[in-house]
Amino acid sequence: MTSSHMCNKGRIDNSDEAENERDTENGHLIYKSGDVLQDRYEIVDTLGEGTFGKVVQCLDHSRNRQVALKIIKNQEKYREAARLEINVLERISEKDPLNKHHCVQMLDWFNYYGHVCISFELLSLSTFDFLKENNFLPYPINQIRHMAHQICHAVSFLHDNKLTHTDLKPENILFVNSHYTLTYNSEKKCNERRINDTTVRLVDFGSATFDHEHHSAIISTRHYRAPEVILEMGWSHPCDVWSIGCILFEYYEGFTLFQTHDNKEHLAMMERILGPIPPRMIQRSRKQKYFHRGRLDWNECSKAGRYVKTKCKPLKKYLLSHGTEHHHFFDLLEKTMEYEPLKRISFTSALNHPFFLYQPKKTQISLQNTNTNIKQYL
Image 1 (spheres, rainbow, N blue to C red):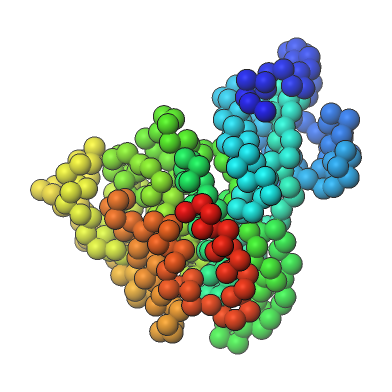
Image 2 (image 1 turned 90 degrees about the vertical axis):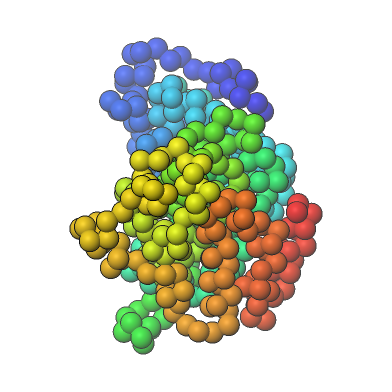
């Protein structure tokens, strides 16, 4: 169904009086557990809240299953964003009807008193929330391998269908099931949650952009933002690859690689971790104010300079082990965080990287099966 049908589907009286009775001051739908929307979706609990609206768990009486329902704020700018997201989700459903490519599945959408509502398969904790609830203890490298393979597969599928996600981060990667086993970590001297099933889904396509559409100057959540975005050089699919590198580092270490809120400081961190920004990128940047005589205008002796120096170190110094698979992993990270977008690793190469080929026997069969599916789209 296209967005052109949207204003007709589920149209209900949207008088000011009705809206005032149903909405909070900032446009959220007022609801309580047990409320039923469209004579079908019975609200069970609130799962989360964002600038766009709220996500609630519902019992879908028509399908007799639990679903997640995204209820968009009753404001035009959020309704318009939801229409764009629905277009993307419909493209994903059309191209992946059997849900093999690790992207969340939209089940339905409707309009409820000015609130666009989108129903999805019900998933579990995000990879960030699991990390947080586990006291930011890193994921084991074999689990990172399986998660990374699925994420690369999902984003490769998007790129093949002329889409860039633009907001990849651990919060937007959800476990299908977040049951865990409690084990004792002798090194950290504490209990550690070990997730039982690392199957994930990619979510939140609200900022996803088709190749032919207008590309906003600034995209991505700060910590996962590629250098070409900060330097306002234009962006395309490779910006997603950079974000994935930042995400995988976070899974491996338990903390964010680029912990900053300032552009110049962010660039200084990149240089400390990855080496100098290439002169060609500096010359082409629309942000010349960050540079002086062809180099980053950065004072290492300032308070911010000392912060970067103590907070950051060259990438390879973050290795937690000198085992082969750890070195393969860092080689992959370096290739995802190549400064120049055109030199950044492609998914075709990434999915054939030694990190993914080096597999413990118990995951070998499932990854081989996934590889067969990937090759249809590469």
